[in-house]
Amino acid sequence: MKVLPQPMTTGTGDVLVALERSGRRKARRRSPGGIVVDVVLVVFGVLMVSPLVWLIVQSLTQPEFAFASPPSWIPVPFTLQNFVDVFEYMPFFQQFGNSLLLAVISTAGALLFSVFAAYAFARIDFRGSRILMVVMLSALMVPAQLVIIPIFIMMRQVGLVDTLASLWLPALINVFQIFFLTQYFKTIPRELDEAARIDGAGHFWILFRMLIPLSGPAIAALAILGFEASWNGYFGPLIFLSSPENMTLPLGLVTLQNGFGAAPAVVVFAAITMVVLPLLVVFLAFQRQIVESVASTGLKG
Image (tube, rainbow, N blue to C red; front, top):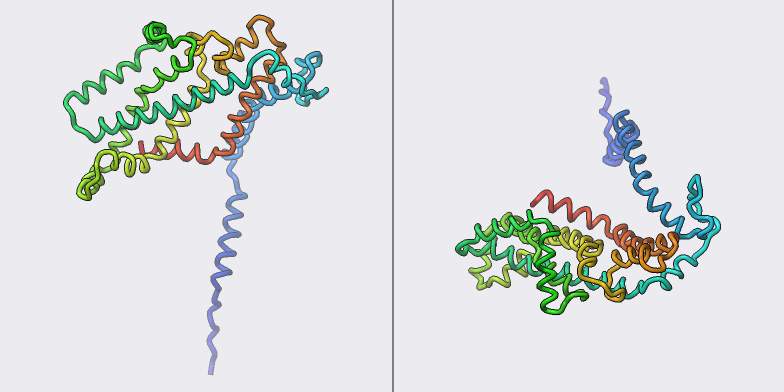
């Protein structure tokens, strides 16, 4: 009796191992085009980071050894005196608190007003809504240098010049955020609203318990952009603020460099480093969340 050879059986583990090895081989095989792209990205990344690294190195170098040619990428001799001198030339903590308070109030207030306005435009059918939206969008075409003149006159009449209120009050109405959230709310099916109304839900329940949670990526992206714009704002504080104790950090840094008794350049670099590093740490800590929020907003909006 002739015995036929039995077919070889392969276990699940062997299949997984083979697939893993195949994936590793494919990962190792990089096309020349991909390698070139990686090299170009690395070069551009180094070029973009090098000014920040040079700034930090100079802020840690003694004044007489700074600005060496060729530039030194190591702080030798090392010193922290430049950071100590920052507090002698400017009220850093006061201006830091002003910038933080202004950014928080402007960002939170603008988002709150924008959410209410966007819900009205997206979910409530009222007469003249389209005309009103067109009028609001046309305001985006007016340069900020022209709008600042009537705003300054209004703030002077109510006695708010040289206060933070003159900056965050106009920032509460953000036309771009209203339009952006309106378009985003329109992508959410209205059938959800009708189902909620059957259960007795009102406008506030629909907005805060349904639309806002579903619009988390869009709101997060607008919050990031709004906070950054307020934190780095210079034109508005330059017009409305004059007292050093009321200034924000961008205006304070310029005053530190060009004002009476201007500080040495290394002290200015130290102040800039103290302003940039906290934001850099926050961005690195929440980089994934920030990128995901912006990416998902672009896909859905």
